[in-house]
Image (tube, rainbow, N blue to C red; front, side, top):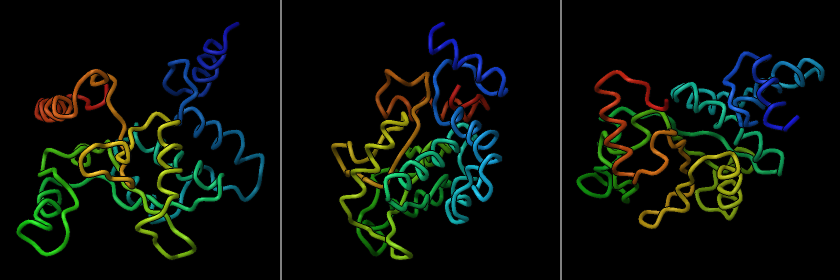
Length: 198
């Protein structure tokens, strides 16, 4: 029996997406149903309350990836929190105005409807030492590697406006598309009330 067949059988028993890949959804359910009950005191896959508030704004398919990244970073001694999730178009426009028509430095090149944050497939993290937020740290690169291992795209790999705190889940239908084409597809799917990731 191949490993993919074993993973499919486990996923079927757990009642989750059966794709033969042991990704974040599979591991989170295994953790919550098998590991946490067996070890008293484990949180069952839940992160800190600040992260959970941001994670709750993401599409359900993206939420396990965000939680898995927090736990994967903790496993290598890096404390991160998810500090931003889905944004409204108005919130995105306000961020775009920063450094242009409002005080502050430029933080985004995306207006409302032009950011993956507007569609619930992107989130930003912060690295912390205790309660102190680190805006600049080599730990972001380490977390970027962990995110890529999970199957996320990392803003630290971008060529213009590198964004090390940024992670996003690319829809399967958009694997071969440019970022611009993908965003156009997301807007069209939203307009047609179609699933954004399927």
